[in-house]
Image (tube, rainbow, N blue to C red):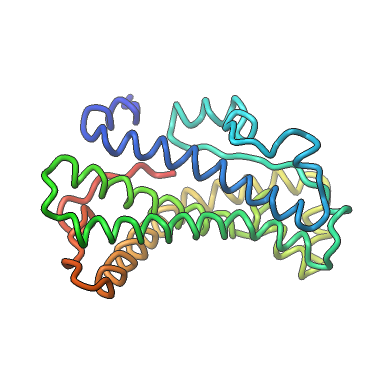
Length: 236
């Protein structure tokens, strides 16, 4: 059986480092975004329980890190108390903060990658390619995370957003055993629709790099790994 870390270490060490940094960093920032939004809404539970920290162990937990080491998949959690939210749509805003952070990280990766691609193409390889792989992996991963987290299956953020606008859906997901059903639906969606999400994430990332370099004054056209030597990105 192949192990994704050993395979990437052999085939593309820069992608391995990029993937580890982006997965852990993106999950931590995703969860912190939930925490910042909850505090803004009047709920200080994240601070009271010690979750407003940069420590990935606090946000991801041991099992998540073990799964990440085994198969490259990880998750996180941020404790909040919706009863403390001051706004009518506090739950939706707090839930939306996580995917919004992922989209912001994707935008930052696209901008920095476009600057690197547009103005630093004379930098010798492997340095030039390694940086491009880092930026592309960050854009791809965070777009995929945003899409998956917006699916309306508990415990994903999309289910909390939808429940805040549809009381009937909120009552449904609060029923016993619905969380387990949501996880089953999520697994089915991941196995059946994962390739579509990943392909869409690649396409959106590539289009973003193209668009950004096209408006940068004096920048050379984008020619990142998605165009010529596309890295075999792990599937989150």
